[in-house]
Image (tube, rainbow, N blue to C red; front, side, top):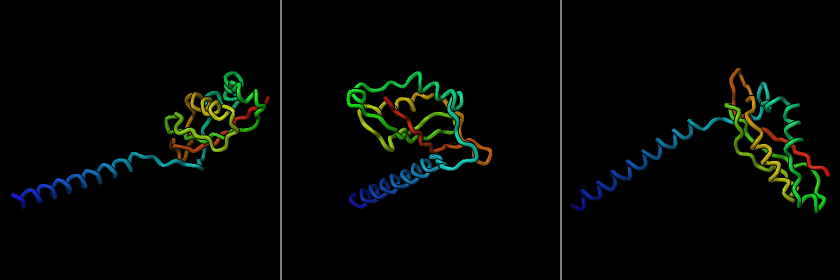
Length: 135
């Protein structure tokens, strides 16, 4: 009885390990390569003119930043996916006072972009956007 139990546990462990390997391989295949250099950079909705208008109309200067006279540029990194959606926005360099969170909100809500193109195909593209806060 002990021998068959040991074989059963060994078989179960081997099954679990092979399932883990298959899952890992499937995850690696579904993860897409993120490009930093592309033939054609992503474009925000309405082009740069439309994006500038969006920023002017929607950017809310945080009260804390106003009170503390905080000004400067917040740099937001994000990925424009092949379908034009925004993924993984994060602050590369912030200035505090609520400006970092506001810059991330603006990027996250910026709409569907025209994706970057490499070798004739839409690809995931890494972007860095400076958002200016000036009193």
